[in-house]
Amino acid sequence: MGIRSIARALGVVGAGLVMCLQAQAQTAGAARLSLAEALRLALNRNPDIRASAEQIGVARGQYLQQRGQFDTLLASGVNYDRSITPYVDTSLPVSAFGQTHLTSTGYRAGVSQLLRNGMSVSGALDAASVDGTAAGAAPGPRQNAVKLDLTLTVPLLNGRGSEVTTAAEEAARLTVLATGYALRDRAALTLYDTMLAYWDYLEKVELERVALSTAERSAALRESTRRLVEASEKPRADLVLLDADYADKQASLEAARLARADAKTDLGRLLGLDVRAIDALGEPADVFPKPLDAPLADVATLSAQAIERRPDMRALALQLDAEQRQVRAAGNARLPVLNLDMGVQYLKVSQGGTRYGFIDAPGRIQSAPTVYARLNFQFPVQNHAADGLLLERSSLLTQLEIRRRDQAIGVASGVGRALRALASNAQQLRSARDSLVLYETAVKQEIVKQRNGISTLIDVINTEARFVSARINLLQVQLAYAKALARLRYETGTLVPAPAGDDSLGNLTLDVAALTGPGPLLAH
Image 1 (cartoon, rainbow, N blue to C red):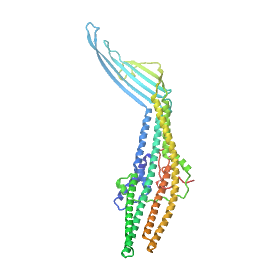
Image 2: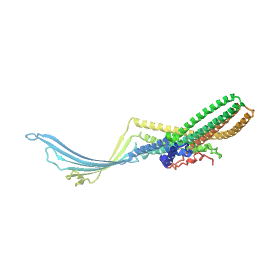
Image 3: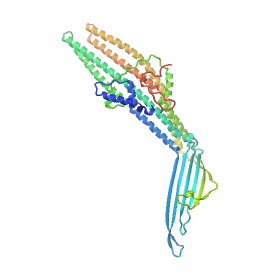
Image 4: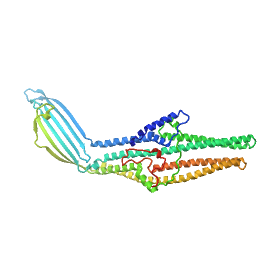
């Protein structure tokens, strides 16, 4: 699919998903949402992607405007003028009044074009006819003239060469390509944000389940203790502690439900869904990714590949190229104007004939063309405009160079941080799983000890609380690992594949089902 139509090409899938989600709003349980479906929805409906796609149209429009200076310009015109001028004839014995009649007609056709090497060519055909009655004279014959003029203008200093003349056009073309990479970067960032929101939603769903099971376990313990109290086997004071514990668990459950609702809303907003579709979102269908067993490539390799692959780096490189062209053109604008005009001219004159047919009237055609060559020189003494333009363009180029160096450093450091975070979270994940197994065993043992009178009720509650904390910690570490893996994919520029060649507006083919894995990050 074309990069500018990412959403359009995924429209059928996205529309079907939205309709399914809205239909599920009327049922007791919505269909579970996979990560692949969430990513497709985000690419199809995310407003940031859609707005970025329209920016390509803006850049293309600006490019067409710059190309317009090389368009062929046709000009034509027809004129008809009749003037009547009264006069007093004093040459006669008795003064008399009279008037002159003068009629002039003509037409003109011309063509001109600026060439990309800086030269300009133009040609014009002018035809004119004049007839009428002068003061005190008899009507004379119609006078006709036809002139063909061809001119070539060659800039010798300012505006010379295609590198200067086409600088603005080439810069606009490079800006179009840079905008295509910016759209790819926007798509990558949206995929990354969607993955984070999806994993966050999954964690909140699991935390709600933990809170619900914890509340249920607290309720069950309170109920069993209540029966023992009623049977006079336990003191009533134990119920006070359990009531407080149950109230605390209920408060935690309500907080978990609120956090889940907020996480679902955040995900739905990234997917571009309306309120009804967000309410209909089902629970996540995927599970947290498992730690990678295969080793990843080293930081230096991944950093170098990221600088070469990432669309934001490519967009910045194109902006640099465009600005360098503008700087060279601005430097040329400081030169004085020295143009050589060369031309050839043919002329035909005649008498009589019809008013608008005089081009075909018989007459005298000069035996040889008229040729001319002129030098035109302009030298602005202060030249503030050109100096200011060069200063502006040079400063913009320096800004881009600083940004590119800093961004390259940021990419390399981002890759290193993501790798370290992934390795650390993988180790924490293994420890958290071992801790959870041990705490689960400890809870069971503590309940048995409490029933046998070896430990107290507070010991059971404290052990249970540590078990819950271990479950929560495992979910948080799983979330951190999933986010670290997504972060590494984003930092290395592997969420969105690089286009073939330098065509940023080319096809974008995504294997969304494989985006949860390491992708091309493994060591070779």
